[in-house]
Length: 178
Image 1: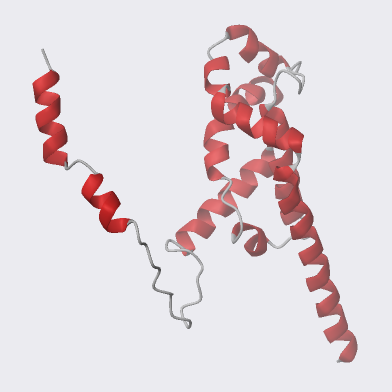
Image 2: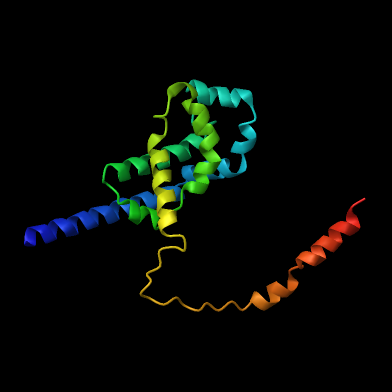
């Protein structure tokens, strides 16, 4: 029994180390730059046929196609989870990769045109797990046996008063329309 307990503790320690390592990656300067690229530039660049052709032909380099750096990151995480090196619940309680997937999905689709569905399949697997996790936890994963804190928002009344009402916005739009 002692050996089983030790194995359990060892596995938990390994899972924690894997999670901590994975959670550090997004703060790497190259990852941050690639994520900013995906958020700020990718959609516009996908309008360029040459940019798309590089993805389709598999000739895209990661200097120009920084979206691939982001995809590589999530591909690794999906593989770690699939192969039991990282517990999905541990990761998904800390991260929601679906927004990133929605931004890079067109690039992944283009890359799969000639090379098939194995391109970033572990990233896809991670997203399927993430969506299933979100369905099981629509209000987060806060333990139901522990009461929530009442948060103090000292600016709520001021900010609410400063927000134009929907009626005021409608009246304004009617005034400026020709």
